Length: 252
Image (tube, rainbow, N blue to C red; front, side, top):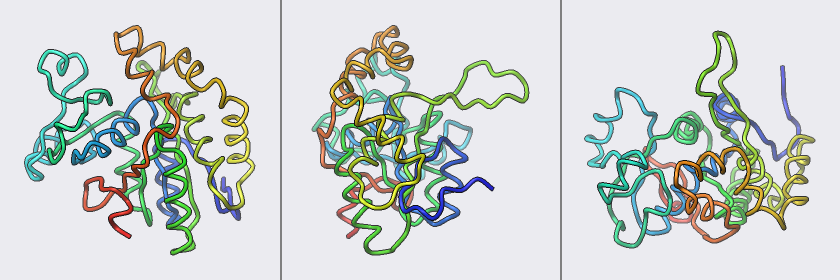
């Protein structure tokens, strides 16, 4: 069976990677740079309360149970003037407000990874802080750390094809965390950290012009791409606790 043992720090992809890491009891860091992770980090930095959920038929009931507003798609939110999956729509005025946030990739991986010893959210925006918090938790529990690059999904897979589309921005986001994270790295994690080291001086340029970045820009969300490509802008580290994200340091 595929395994990155006996290394302390690992990297995995997508939902299956999150599930395997949770089964091992690892500390899991979910990375979905464009845009779930960046949105959660930004929203919590401004004091919003975020509940992750898959986009399915149970979302409405889930939101009602938590007294949370279901966020709208980017285009709908632009006309309604409310926050959405776009991280730049969150500010100090949203402090204390409760939102059910869904996405096809990051939110699903977060829900799956929630069965782990600790589920953190990482991005370029908080890479060093996320690595530091994972190291602190590892020091307490002795658990390994798996950084899960969520990737994207193909919109039109043929029958039997894998829907996962690995994404450059999530790989570099995972590498930014692994580069700072102490401990032995699996070969996969070492190469991921090396990709970030090699690209660090061009991170903003690469995220801007990668496939996912161009896709968002062409839809009119260039500011999202600029924001999500900023390195170590926040010290906020979201951690899943009782179905919502809280600042991990508050659970210390």
